[in-house]
Image (cartoon, rainbow over all chains, first blue to last red; front, side, top):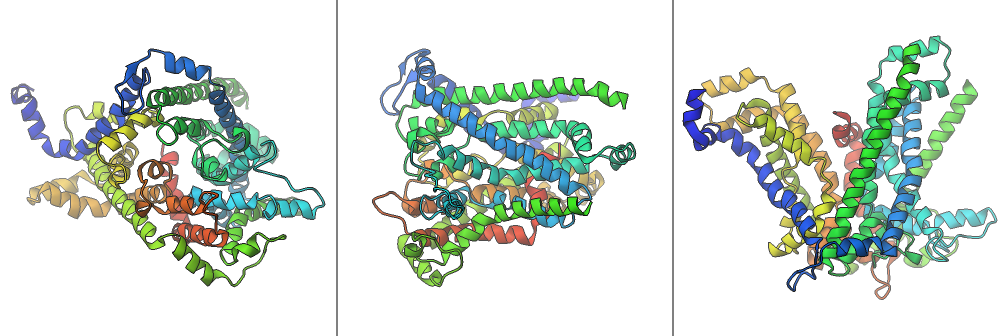
Length: 314
Length: 274
């Protein structure tokens, strides 16, 4: 102990130089490209700045302006709507698919898994280009199918913009359902077979097993995917941007597919150069990510305790 | 019971159809001329325009250049991530040094920060560094990521016996030799999982390159596709665009299909391990 003290800071660093050298890249890169931008972002959000002229301190003005900007709220609403509806499929569908593939009801589990996971290795830009044509007005496969059934084709991208979000939701769900399914499957495989056998002896059917055993036991994993989904949805950008043509960040007809991230990048640096204002937007989006994640954690904690007496009874 | 099973298979197969439909459509349109694509009804089966579409892609963009750019960014990024993350993970797992626990806690905390908060200053930094139109902006900032270190640390702890390292030290091997000759080979499958994550992420990366690479000759493949999708003035050659999309998607798709189990466990490793 006394020897360590006499070494001093430089002595310590020198003695453990190998370990410190090995971990140094992370902390250096993190300080420069992670920590600094986040701190600077908060500072810039209190200024008016176009990136060239001197910065002008405006206090809370950027935040006040943002709260009063209808377009910001519209992009937030779009993001929430797209995220919530898509997650019925991504989360609910992912869970059901994982349950089916984990049970002994079907064969070829690996084949199904592989196909459902395919979109995860596919470039979002390429997929969005394909989905854009699938939803084409006159020659899109989906309208061809609708017309062959005798209905009128849907103007997915135009009209009054009612259907733009549907196309985004369809693509978003297509992309992510396999990812959630594979994660839930891994979680389910960790659940002891004994529990299922006991339930079977007690005469529980699959619906009961799914809701009473599988879902409650998977709660930590579902929570994990929920938090990931929150971040992913609030960063949703490539898909709606390419689906609406890839030429502007305004989200297509009546801004129906303008997400929060598109709104942000449209302020700076891609559309305009309102750096201070865009920083405020980035901070508000980040705050919402944290708040929604905390709410998810709270809700899941409460459910956990509510569910436990039932389990004890069993 | 048989009825129920048939029903389950039908549902699963219907979803297989839905998942594969975009891929099928992309492949079909890759072989069709744009005029046929815009007819009603559109072609549902393969055509004979594949070679012509290849020529059209070659005329519209410099595909080889974009492919090379994507390859450079992806390979350099992945190699650096593997190097820095295995170094960091190895140090946290096998060395005892002052501040280890605290530093590791900091590392874990950084995984929970929403990076969106710093995106504007990040972009401004890149321009101050002269990294606009520079691959370094896509390679360096994320080269030592917290998750990778966390992942490699677990891997080292489980797979490297401390006695092996001690023996190597007694034999007089230098730290670098120990790391590259003894540690690195043991970490091979840990490297593979991390590499899959990084390659898939960087090959398909779109938002960062969109902000950074403004010059056409520096475009990576996703940016090239966006350029081909184009503005209304230039018009879109749909057949060529579909073929180009196919060519962008194909390398990872083939790799995935030939080692799907490996890919799935690799990509979801972070989610599944704690």
